[in-house]
Image (cartoon, rainbow, N blue to C red; front, side, top):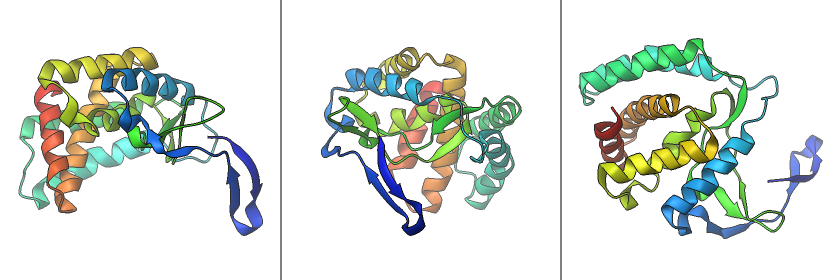
Amino acid sequence: MQLLAAQPDIGALLLERLNPHHSLRNVELLTTAEVAGGLLRRLAVPAPDGLPQLGDIAEDLADSLPEQQNRLGRPVPGKWLNAACGLARDFATQADKLLVHTDLHYGNFLAGQREPWLAVDPKPVMGDPERAVPELLWTRLDEVDGAAGLRRLLAALVDAASLDAEAARGWAIVRCVDYWLWGLQAGLTGDPVRCQRILEVLG
């Protein structure tokens, strides 16, 4: 989305007009994955200074996930929790310095006039673009045809965005464990189940 004008002193922004009623939620899933992956890659430009560091976030996750797990009665199987913590520690030591949109689900791609699709509602950090993949797996998971369908969706996203396949899979494991625990704390019912389904295939 393009910024047209701004008055920082009063906190006002003028943004280009997009269609809030036409998002990638309404497009066939694998076609959607190609579009989303292409935009994910375009957004992965060098990040400006001052953004939160994904390496720091990953390190915090590695430390906090076991505490959350114990507090909630250990709902996540140990092998997945251990895998998530190990991967998070690895990611903490090798984070890139690219711009990452950390809420890049299909509803945040809206139809535009300047271009067919543009991303909105950025929650930017500096790090690895593979971090953006999990939201694109779980937000339309009910449309995926079993384990093979999930693997096809992941492969389509990785190919369209020119991502590292193992890093994308790793971030999916980390984020699914994190979101499973967060969802239980928030009283959600459907999202932890979706996370479990993804982990059963990728973990």
